[in-house]
Image (cartoon, rainbow, N blue to C red; front, top):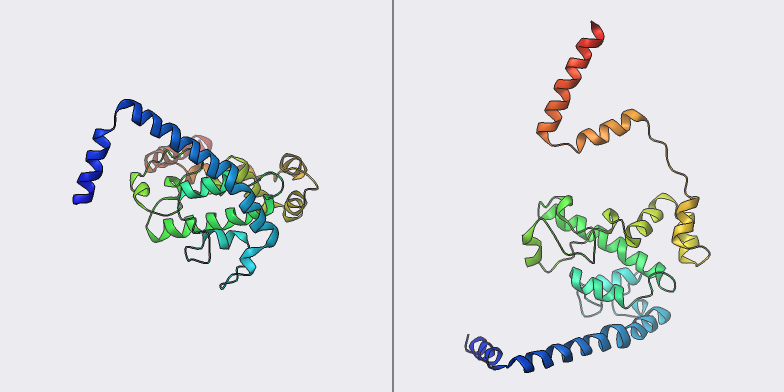
Length: 224
């Protein structure tokens, strides 16, 4: 308690110029660490496949990155995940390893939501945007980013992995880029009744009732 009071007093003592200087200092240090010092370290870890040489051998970089033990990198929340993403070449050199991270992240976020009875809709679908309809998520030191619901590169990469594993392999091998891969994936034609079903289940209870009432009216009109 006393240390907190001292810390608050120190904050209050700082002049405007000192606060300005501290902000400049921290921004510079952050830029140096995350965007200059960390990327070559991550690259060397991936090149040497260090996750295979830890006491707890991992199947891939994703498991290693998210492991909270001393053997892993301990990426435990959205902010840390964003820092890791910023330090990786996710579009070319490290796309395969980032894909492994995304698979782990998606699974962990779904398990977390299920265990805590959180709606999937309340999870973050954009790692860059931290707006969320559920303020309680910010109080947890857990990853709440669901890349499979994202429209970003992350979401496209995960969806390609599930829909067309061969095209995904070509992307991570550098044979084609992600956009070209999606052009080659044939769009599945959905039957109109399936489209209606999907839309129906996404409606609120009130809208469902209104739709069913309208359906009954149309049914009567057809019979008459």
